[in-house]
Length: 294
Image (tube, rainbow, N blue to C red; front, top):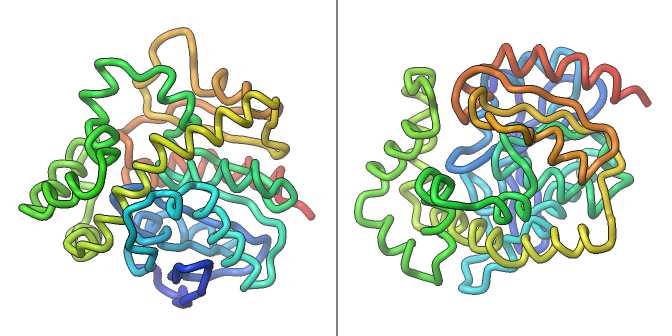
């Protein structure tokens, strides 16, 4: 689904990361979210590859990547998963690059920018505020809407067993809930997501990702807040229109984490790279052009 992109497999600290590369120009890393794979960028990556060297990966344990199969979740901390991406970019000869992350990929992206400040030239967060900020605001509406955050964070192997009963039904329910218009998910993309989600080890990686989000990732965020550590790169944040209707916007939240922040709401649901690819491209194009000059 990424015509002209080449597949690579890169070893990284107990994991094997599948990566696809295409285009030429300044390096740009694309990180997908749950419950997807690199296929989520099929409507974005080819357009960006006209001006950038685009690298997109399957996150540790997701899709075609492989990750540790263990009970303890620290191997799926965003710190560990960010190190995977630094290893991937170094493999291709890039020590400094821009990052666009959606959903879980954006959580890895901002952790990468915090832990490796010299590596990230610019960061785009699609639909995400920092993990500790989510937990601090979690209430009834969040628990009902983002039920998988609560379910997947349960101890091994309760959610793994529950999802094994009918993974196709759970995945279909999830994607339809996330997308304002589920018809944007092509049969080919759905097939790729189903093929991955049917694999026990992929589902386990997703559980571990969320377990880490409820524990070690939150701890890392709180430690950064306590010391005043912030992102040293420009940040662009896009979110779903209608999601933040109060006085506090994601831009305001991110300004606690970075000094150079801009952003706005765009139409559609949660799956922005698939539902609103042109709106995403219209936003990230000027932002990257301003912030990726060597």
